[in-house]
Amino acid sequence: MLLRNMSASSRQHEESYSISDLAREFDVTPRAIRFYEDQGLLAPERSGSRRIYAKRDFVRLKLILRGKRLGLSLSEVAAMFDLYDAARDEKPQLAQFLAALGERREQLERQRADIDEMLGEIAVFETQSRKLLAGAGKAGRNRNA
Image (cartoon, rainbow, N blue to C red; front, side, top):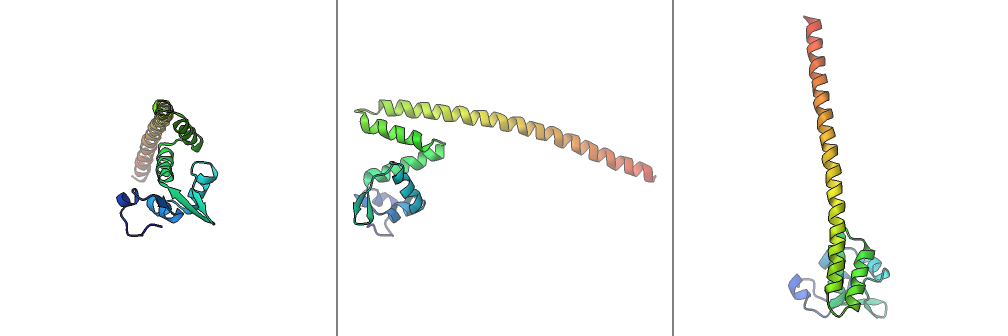
């Protein structure tokens, strides 16, 4: 088990991690780590009921979280892990990663276009509403005069 006051860089050189070490390091819950384990993405050794995570699990958890941040599904992350485990070189994994990133980029660009369109519509309705409010204010002043 790691000491709590160890820096992140020195932790990365350790050979094993507890579930709480990983949870603290990556600011995730132990439940999330167990979920990734249930999905086959992490494979800790067991010592009784304790999980002992290796450097490989540390790196994989980092990649899982990076993939999630990029919008990749866990099945896409798992497929890349499978490619990496089976391949003699990294080319297939990198090619699949680039394809997944390309798909994610296209999806985000479509969402951005939709957002830009909605913002344009909002701007039109705001302008129309302000004109109507301004006209209603003038009509009220003219009646009182």
